[in-house]
Length: 273
Image 1 (cartoon, rainbow, N blue to C red):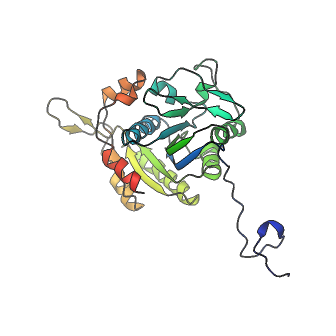
Image 2: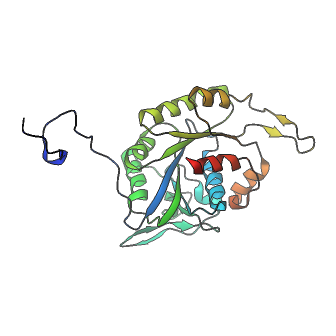
Image 3: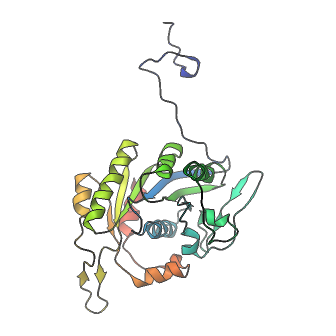
C-alpha cells in the first residue's frame, strides 16, 4: 500500500480513514439559507401544513427571513393556506419563489401548474427530482430559516430530502390518538437512522377549549406527547388546540393573520438550537 495522501478522491483503497461521499446537493448560487428545518408526520391528516405555516409566520414575526418549500408534491397546500395565486417566475439564473403578503417566500408545484386543481400523476423518482430542483434551482436569496413541508410517511421524498438537503433538524407533527403515537416513533427512528436531530414535537388538535368556561376537553383522547418526548429526550413540545378560526384562516388564505400564543415558547427554543 502506498503512503496515504489523505485525498480520497485520488485513491482507490478502501481504508478505515476513507470519508463517505456526501450526497448533499448544492443550493442555487444566489441562495444563502442559514437553517433548514423539515416538518414531518408519520401519517396524513394531522395538520402538518398548518403547523409548517404557523412556524414560518411565527418566525417571521420574530423578524427572521423565512421561506417555505412545499415538498408534498402530490398534495400541495401551502399556496392555498397563504392565499397565493400568482405563478412562480424565473430566468437563466433560476426560479423565483412567490411571496406572501407579509414577504414569506414559498415554492410549490401548484405555482408551476396551469391550474391549481390539476393532479400531479408522477412516479416516485420524478417527484424526488422535483424536490431536489426546489433546492438547487430556486433562488431563495438570504434566508434565516427554510421550512420544508414534507409529505406524510417515510418514503421517497423524506429520504431524498434527508440525503440531498442540508437539513439541520426536523419537527414532528402529531395528534392525540393512540395509533399516532406509534407512527411518531417511526418518524423519530427514521430521523435517528439519518443522523438528523429531532428539534421538537407539535401536537395538533390536542384539545378543545370551551369559549364560555375555558375548560379543556380531549376530543381525540388523552395526549401521550409528553411520554414520547421523554422517551426520546425531546425537550421542545407544543400543543395546538382545535380552533375554528385557524381552519377558517387556512380556507381563506389568511394564515398570516392568525392569533394565538401556542408556539411562542416553541419558536423561542427553536432559535436557540
